[in-house]
Image 1 (cartoon, rainbow, N blue to C red):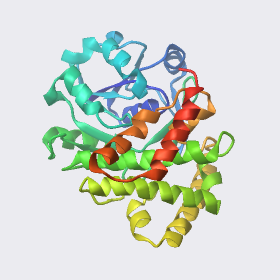
Image 2: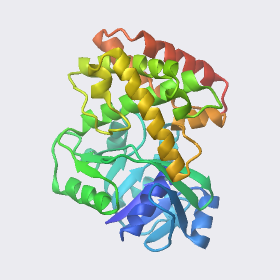
Image 3: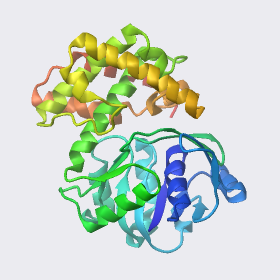
Length: 338
């Protein structure tokens, strides 16, 4: 298959590099210094998948207009706030891509893609993969789960095109499933990202990492309280937690276990998270939103937290912890640069 990844920073480069390493034809669209470094020396990937350089089956450009030919799948991976700019720049791709999907955070991005590309071209996609741009040409893969990527038709069901994309990702080394109801995956992923991100920016502050907070009982308590607010909304929508991204997200257990046992589970997760960081050489140990706070950049507060607040208001669900965390995040975000 031919893939084009618009917004090839840390995560986009990890995904694109792994696909290219497996023999898929991949074009990365990214910033000049990063693209120039890859052209000169190849794409260096370190972390949980090993330490290797990808040179074959990989094309690097700084603007979609520079990408020749047609593509089977366009993957949008810019920050949510950069979506409109990215789609405007990618106008020349509309008639040259067969499918379009987004691995961005949030809910509603698929409808925006349908407006842009046409309803039938857009498929649902979700991943929990983590990637960090260490320096131009060098990215670190820092997070995965046994099943780390999901694809499905937005109106429900699995079609041959979904199976083909899922097979390509599976062959590249990503645990992948084709799903009948991809929208549930999208909402559960947002619950996981929202809990982890909201907890990080409201509990950890600047110097601490994810395991630093989870290994402290008070930090684990805060995490479970926030997770249970998200769960109230998720279940009011008619869903039951499926643990799509276990063991990183174990929302069935957060929901069903007695409170003290749920806290113990979170503290154990903190220990495993630190062990994984040490094994992979990762030093960040932060969610993308916490990374933005740490680097004094605007966070995706409304993209990651507000959909659940809006849904809570719509369904009449009381979420005081989520409301508080959202307020803390908005105050911190007000002082950050675009």
